[in-house]
Image (cartoon, rainbow, N blue to C red; front, side):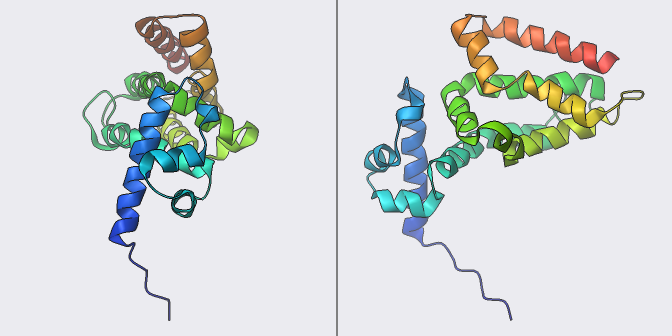
Length: 195
């Protein structure tokens, strides 16, 4: 007989929320998010460092949880929202809209996206749940386009244009304005899906 699921204590849920809020504020203000430690987050949340480790496992787990919390409204719009993101939109329009959503999310969350992708490093980035989700969605939309070959590779190639390190290079170092980046990505995606 399987063991019954243990309910999370109310104080544990409250502590997790406090940690996520504190981490969110720290990452938003930090010029060097890679320097933020679990101890910094625990102190800002008013909890012990052990509480943070129990709730999130490690720094990468905390980054993933924060990233997922910020990403939830975008995910909801993609799964059930109106055009151009939601289902029912022609794939030639939906692919650029999905990439735009990823790009805007990364522009709005540059430090967090950089920290998360750096903590995933190398091949691990492509096995991360958030990456797998975006890749799977893009691949399934690309599969709807007649004559498009290898939608799996195409989805990877399109997502590469939204990597946090590239977004940081273009928006941060090169100073490319947000709307210009969005327009460039839209043109690139439109060319790919047009065949």
